[in-house]
Image (cartoon, rainbow, N blue to C red):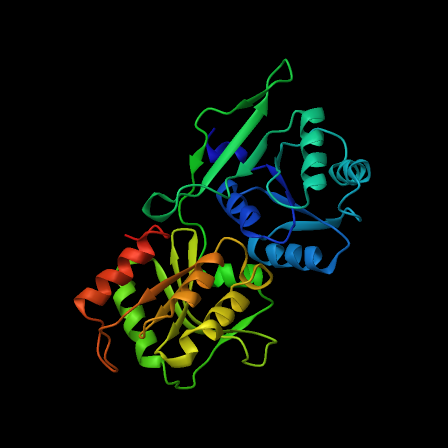
Amino acid sequence: MDISDEVAMILLCLAGEQPIPNLLPARFLQPAQTLIAHTSLDASRKSAQRLAGLIGNTRLFSVGDGYQIARILDAYRREMGEPGDEVVVNVTGGTKPMALAAFELARQRHYPVVYYQTEGPRGRDQKSMLYRYCFNEQGQLCLEEGYPRELPGLITLDDYLKAHLDGYHHNTRETAGKALEDAVAQALKPHVDEIKQSVVPDGVKDQAEIDLLVRCGNQVGIFEIKTGGEGSGKKAVDQLTTIAAREYLGTYAARFMVTQASMEVRYKSLASALRVEVIELKEYRSGRPLSQTDSQNLLTRVSNILPTH
């Protein structure tokens, strides 16, 4: 089905902790209007509000308790009104009861259903895949022709940050590790779609800083970069996992710990358990670009997780 055939479409999304599985399908399908259901919890409501700011032409509504399936279904029916409009239901987000209620609404009214694949191959084979299903005349669920469909790059790093944070700014102060951050950014720049450095979420009083972010298509990586010493051990891992926590930057961002010094084995084990990729740049010298060996090591390790080019 061509997107041009869906200009009058209404898209129903379910706001949960992770906004990207709602943002990407909305950007791809380009509905005439997006309805965003959220619960009575502040986190769900704020997530819906952030999505609304990035999608445009949206209407938000509350389903109240996110775990009462029958009540949630009634809320969907009230908001959608009588069947008639072309509606697509995205069941990827929200609580599981919200998704079950949305699927039941789609089944009763024969609305198409979309699902954004949140897991799959990593590295260069990683793709953003959207599935779209419809109900046939017998009420059976069928995968629509042409799906699953790979989504092109639909977001920027600014979009990603605004989807997860109330705001952010850049730290302009010079730091001891700024030269290494610049060297890492310069080595990665030809192989990624976008880079941001020294990003500070609003409201944390500069206590949490993201040294480097990269975007490859719709995939994002977060880097903690240390020149060495005690700062490249448990403290650095803790800093990275704090700023890259699901409450800040979502579940799907890749985590990288880049250090000039060798990291102790015990901290590498901790990093691995926390899904942090440790990259050691042992040939780095302050103020200089990365050596060919370090550059290749950096790119290889990043490419194992993100779809670099």
